[in-house]
Every structure is written in C-alpha cells, then in structure tokens.
Length: 509
Image (cartoon, rainbow, N blue to C red; front, side):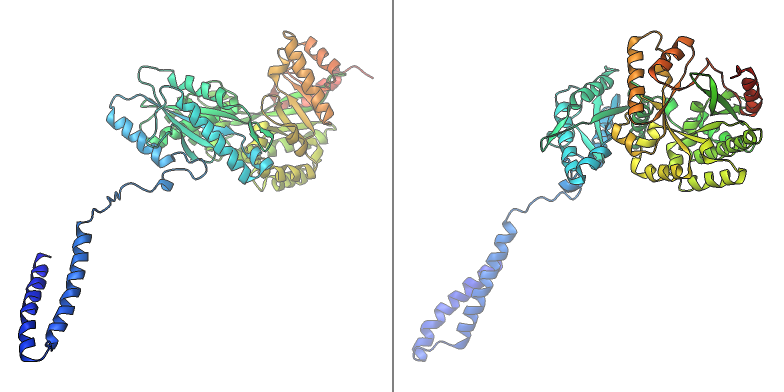
C-alpha cells in the first residue's frame, strides 16, 4: 500500500516538471504519455485506497461451533430442544464431579383429544401456552436449573414431552416435591376463543448417577416411570429398577417366556360369572397363568408387561384364543350354553390379522361368535383410539361381545364410551370390595351402574366376596357379578365338570 502511494507521488512530480518543459518546446501541447499515465495511476490510487480501507475495517467474529437459534429451540414453544438440554446436562456433571441431578420428564396427558377437538393449528397454540405456563412456574422454584437460553428452565423434547434438570445436592426428595407442585400448578384449564380447554400433566423422574450416567438412558428411565403412572395410577413419579426390561433377571425371563408355549408351561384358569337374581352361570373369564419350573405359578402382571415389550403379546393371545374357542366347542357338544371372556391388550388391537384369526378359529370349531367375549382395558382404548376403533368395529361386526374392563379406574370420557362399540362394562373390584364399609363406595358404584344403564350397557361387578354386597348390587340394578362368593378360579379343563355339578345343585324350577 505504501509503495503504491510513493509511485503515484513520484509520477505526479515528474508530470509537474514535464508540463513547463513541454509548454516551452511545443505550444501548449502535453505529451500523450503524461495523460495516459496520469489517468492510469489515478485509478490505481483509488483502488488501492479502497483495498486499504477494507483491510483495516473490523471484521465480525464467526463462531462456527454454535448452531443457529432455530436448531437449538423448538419451533412451536420456542423452548430449548433436546440437543441443547443434553449439552447443559453434560456441562453440569462435568463441572461438578459429585453432582446429584434429577431429570424430570413432564408429559401433557391425553393431548390427542385437544387435537381432535380443536384441530392441529389451534392445538399447537394450546401447546405453546402450556409450555409457557410450565416455564413460568418452573422459574419460581429453587433447585430447577436454568438452561443456556434466556429465561428458559424447561426443554421441549418434542411432541408433548418436556424436561427439567433439578439439582438434588443435599435434598434427596427435591425433584419429587417439585414435580408434584408443577402438576398442581399447571393443571388449570386454558381459555381459547371463549372455550375452556382441560388437560393434565404427569411426570416421571430419573436420578443421576443412581439410575445411570448417559443422558439418553436417563430420559428413557424417566419415561418408563411416567408410563408406570399412566398404567397403574401410581403416586410416585420416581423410576424403580423393576420398571426396566433390561435387568438381568428380566432378560432371563424374556428368554424363558419364548419357550413357555412350546414347553406347555402356560395354563388357563376360569372364574364364573353369575346372574345375581338366580345365581345362574352365564359366562366365565379366562385367566392366563405361567407355571414356571423354578419361579412357581406366575400371575399375568408378572409377565404380561414383559411380553408386551418384547413383542410376544400377540402370540400369547392367539394361544389363549385357540384354547378358549376349543373349550367353547367342547361345552357346546355337551349341551352347555356359556360365554367365555378373554382379555385383549392394546397391542393386540393393533394387529391387523386379529379379526381374521378369530373368525378362522370360530369357523374351524363351529362356535357361535356371540359365545366369545373380549375384555378390553381402558388403556387399550385410550392409547391410540383412532387406530383401534376400526378393529373394534370389525370384531363387533363378527358378532363378538366387547366389554370395557376395570371401568372407573381410568379416564374414559362419555364421548368415548358412545364412540366405541361396547356391550358391557365391568366395575373394578376396588369399588366393589369396599361397599360394605363405605357409603361413598356405594354411591360411586351406584353412579357407575346408572351411567352404564343410561348408555344401554350391561354391567358386571367384579370382586364380589360377601352376600350383603351381592344384595346391594342387585338392588342397584346390577345383573351380573363375579367373585369369590360364587367361585374361586379353577383350571379351564375342569369347566365342563364344574358346570354339570353346578346345574345339578341348582334348585328345580
């Protein structure tokens, strides 16, 4: 730069000296090279000056390692996303070797109803408002760590899942307390265009380093804890080791369960259902058991969740259906008219071949479809209602009887009850067993019976153990009942003999 300016200055000096000399020798005529050189070096001076100014101008700092804002935040809520909260988690545990951290996974439960009622655009508006409310509530609680984003204490993992990081140093139950507080604070309805939108949130908690050190593993375990609350209405949101299907004991059970059918370790029991006015047996529920060679007789709750996780539920259900329909054919040949009920899981209802499989079994054994009852948990209907509804309609079209099991323990709405092609509801045993002790239980049971009758659904009371309870149910209008008062469960193979003995003992007329 400096040398170019020197060259320009020398040229101007030579040009200035050449002008008088040229004027003296040639009348007022300058040589051509003076004009050409003057113009060329003038342009060189201008370009050189521009380059010098740009070189000295301060340049903006570029940080290639930091992604842009939209890659670090959720589009709907504007909250930090999973990538950003993972980086904050790693930064926290790296800077504090003795850290005790809780991951609190928060989920908006049954948000699909909001989608159905309002449409996705309005549902996203509701979701963003709930996210804002959750973040504002989290900011008021000590112990919830701020994330590396302005005014953010909550990360949006996608869908309806959110995550908070809670410093548990010296406060063992801090995360559980905060989770319950947030569930209560956030549950108030939202107003959208003059309509109140109801929702609820649930949480699941995993702890670092007790439950693991990997971020994804901890998120998964918090999700397992949350799912356990959805299934069992458990109060504690904290993850427990028995919730995981990857413990060594459960890994061994998974391998053993695959061999259980082939080695004839599974067995079926039945428990009769009676008509309360005359004690006539009209149906029986089929109950699956696992006669484990080492662990002993296992109840369904000890292995059915395992079968669900490892994809073995449908083969188990097919085996139960086959044995049940064979028994119906045996009863039919002996002149015994009886319905048998089989429990169907949510994963079964998502199998497109379920209806065809049942239809083939009924045709093979020449059994009337009305003799087969399928009992469905509320969870099975509510997990993916739009996906299971077509299957339920196909099953009902075959002539099967569909029953909602454990009614009263879940969150099935009246609208859902009308939409699903159900014929019966079974009142959960927890309401029936306390009727002789509590007027409140009597009132709840009566309300459920009235609701079912108004919807033209038959009612079955489960867990009847005492005669006064049976009499109260009869006065309330409940017709069917099941429980130890009438019979304890016994082997399915003994059902024909039990029925003959029962009919023999029935009073004539």
